[in-house]
Every structure is written in C-alpha cells, then in structure tokens.
Length: 429
Image (cartoon, rainbow, N blue to C red; front, side, top):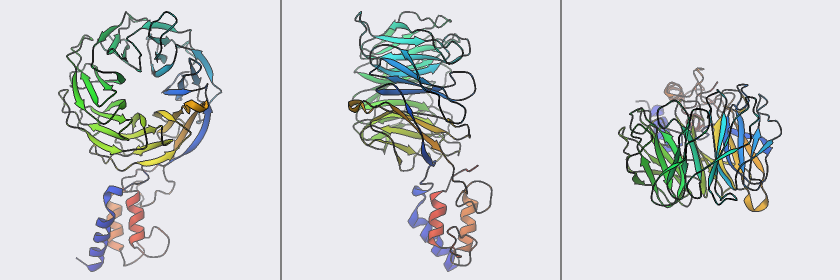
C-alpha cells in the first residue's frame, strides 16, 4: 500500500464513521404558527383532502384543538379552534367513520363537569372542518390516545393510556364507540402506541409507564389482550413509538425518557418479546419521540422534543438500528410534542413542534424544514449520494492531486476527508 493511502486510512480511522453524516437531515427554521394558548400535542394528516399535510394541535388553556390547514407550500392558514375536554393532553388523526376523511381523537386529562374522564371524537365534515365533539368515558387521567383496528373488523378503534390501565373503545363502524374496556396495567401510564409486535397480523399495544418500564400487551385477535409483560427502559418514559428500526421486518420500540435525558431503543425478536434497551443521549427532559426517514436514506430516524433545553434532537439511523449522536436544533420554549411529515411538498420529511411554554402563555408551533445540502458535499461521482465509491475516489487522490478536493484549495487532504465523512450516507436530490 502506498504511503499516501496509508495516511488517508489513518486519518479516516481517526475521524471515525461514528461521526459520519453529522448533519443528519439538514433542518432550517420554517414558519412559526400561532395556536391558542398552551399547545401540547401535535398531530399531522390531510384534513381537507387536498393532498397536503395539515396540523391539529391540542391547547391546554383553551380546552381546544387548533386546526391549521396547509396551503400547499408549507404555509398555513390561520387556525380554526374546536372545543374538546379539559386539559387535552394527546391527539391522534385517523378515519374513524369510514368515509375516507381524517378525523380526530383527543385524550382529555382532567374530569368533565360530570366527574368523568373522557376522550373526544371530532368527525371531519370532509373539508377540514369538524363536527362538535362527542365524548366517551375512559379510565382516570387519560394521557395518550392512539388509533388502529384492534378487533380486525376493518374499523379504526381507540386505545387510551390512563392511570388505571389501557382503555380500549371499539368502533361501531360509523365513528361511534362502545363503552370502554380497561386492561389493567401497573403504574401510571404516559403513552400508548399500536403496532403488530408478534407478527401475527393483529394490532398489539406498547405502553410507557411513568417510572421506568414499557409494557407489551399482545392482541389475542379480538381486541382482548394477553397479560402485560414489562421491559426496563430509562427514567420516566413519556412517549413510545413503534417502527422497524433495524430493517429485519420486525417491530422495534423507541421511548423518550424525560428524566434520563435519553431515548431507549428495544429491538423486537418477532414473537412479541424484546431485547434489553440501549440508550442514546438527547436534550433535557425529552417528552416526545417521532420516527421517520429524515435524511432520505430509507432508514427510520428519530426526532425528539426536549422541553427543558428548548430543542429538538435528531438522531439518524446507521441502517442497523443503531443511531449516530444527536444533532440539536433550537426551537421556542417548552417543546413537548414533535411530529414528522412532508409539510412543504418537496419530498423531504419536515418537523412540527408544539412549544408549550406553559408558564409564559406559549402559543406556537415551530416548523423545521428539511433541506438536503444543495450541492451534496462529498458526492464525487455525481450519483446524488455520498457512499463508499466517493470515499474510494478521495482516498485514491489523498495527498496526491485534487481529485478529491471538496474545499476548493486545489488538493485532497484531511479537511476534504472530514467533509466527506460529515455527509457519508447522505442521499441528495
């Protein structure tokens, strides 16, 4: 091996691929959207049927939902407000009445005037406006709501995390719901997610418990569930998400641990059991985790809303279910919810962040727009990605000529290698 190639490889190893693609999705501030006071949970869906991703945001102080319709380019119309219950903590978007429109379900944390804890259902009129809420009783202090077909009849049912367990409400097929059945789970639950965890085609439940556990409830096929099984995670998990993180076709878990200042990753085995959790550092007091492909490489990445540090952490997937160190983006005060979708219609996944700023009357949703680097730094062979072929080109020119010159100084050196490694794994348009 030539000395120049040896030097290049030593530099490569000293920089390390653990820092590769440090930008990990390149986000820039987008519009700041006004909601009613105390935005807490943000949901995304096409609410008016025009093909664009709209926003629905619960607001604690107004006991309402702010609906912001996308104008098609990432700009949003002024909010419309719909009344729900007291302290709406969580929102989910889905077709609840089978008419093809996106409806809303909201978990209301505090009791109504009749001393009942409720979930609100708002059915879409078909144009992004909503009928008056219908409320359904659930277990105590509901914290989180999720939508999926739990009994296999083709209708979207509800699962609600409460202080008494998971309340399941089965859909009658027209957007009305039967009385809840609550499945007892130890502790005070903070979040629920729905997915097929044991590969049997049924929708199972993953439920974060407020101290240090996640509970798995496997569906027996008819919306009844096996005895909950728990797994250790970080301190005070506030949010759980389900996705195949390592590309093996099996559902994995990601949890935001509020007092651990980290996220826990648990890889599924395929039979509804999970390996021990691995943690990755994020910002202070993470409240919410969203899973989406943020850098365009086909692997699901993580976005985490950090309330205490007023930031969003983005962690990009290495492709095997391990994650690179966080990249931090500042937002407004007190972010408690993050959701991901293409908000400006450019094909990249953007972020919407609800900034509660609870003690100061906060009322904004921050939009972070995903922008691939326009000139795709490190793409030496012009195929719109930065990969092993580009690294080979650079190494062949290392300390010899300008064939790998990325900083326009007419040579190929460690600075160029650092640039390439910073974007290694990036797919650009």
